[in-house]
Image: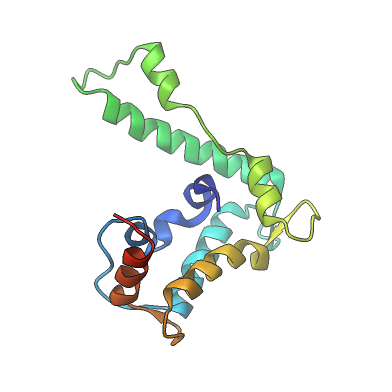
Length: 155
C-alpha cells in the first residue's frame, strides 16, 4: 500500500504502524474494533462531504494538507540554525512526492467507479491487521507485532 495514503488518511492513527516498520511496539493489545474506529476516523477526515465515498477532489485536498504538514516538518528539520531560511535547492529536495492521487485511487478503487468506499479504504489495512493477529482473536498484541516484525526482518 502506498505510504502516501497512510500519511493522507490514517498512518498516524494506526498504533502498530510504527512497530511493524521497526519502531517500538505499543504497550497494550489493540482490539479490532478500536482499529476500525481509527481507520474510519481517517476516512471521515478525508470524506469532506460525508457521503461515504472518497472522490479524487477529496483525495487531492487531503494530499495538499498532508504535503503542507510534511513540508513544514521537513523545513523545521532542515533549518538547523533555526533562522527560518532555507535555500531553494534544500526546499525543493524536501518537497518531492513519490505517490500520486491517481496511483492511490488505482490501488484502492477495486470496483473502478472512480471513488473509494469505506470498504475499499479498509481492505488493505484490515489485511495488515489480520496478518498481525496471529492467533485470530481479534486483538493485536505487542507480542504479535514483535513476532511479525522479527519474522519479516523489520529492524
